[in-house]
Length: 225
Image (cartoon, rainbow, N blue to C red; front, top):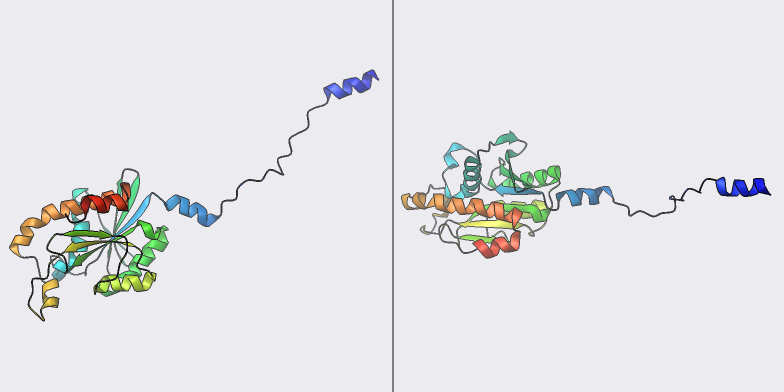
């Protein structure tokens, strides 16, 4: 009896059975989504490659990214389907992309870099010129049609959606009938050149706000300015 009592009190406690505890399963695609929800953004400036297009109205998307890159001492690297610079700000990473596919094939570059960097659609912003807005006027929208813009038209086609943020920069429509192509591919006039730096400064702030303050706040703050 005494031996039995000693064995009873000296036996080691049973280990807890942890095998039956159910832990929530996180799938790989969910991990990727969690990782990309708030940290990485793809900012696409639309334009045409080549020295002859550098200072044209149609290349305002490139111009905005070039301005931000110069201001923040960033360098563009030649990569697949474009030129890319990485900008880190307040814990966010902004990938600044200038597609080298020419305007009407921009969607190929956008989709490639979205997939490669696992960037969700809500973290994509496309910067483009807009004939329907007066010079320098800014309009940011969460979705919309291509408005006759070949770059947006191709992006809509390739992504199979219009549900991405576009930042439209007004270039006005001060051209005579039949001269639209010459106008958009023409260079800024002297008055526009003088006003561009201030407009580009605001454009840079819009990019940063998109990643830090969110789309709704960015639209409220900057639309119409």
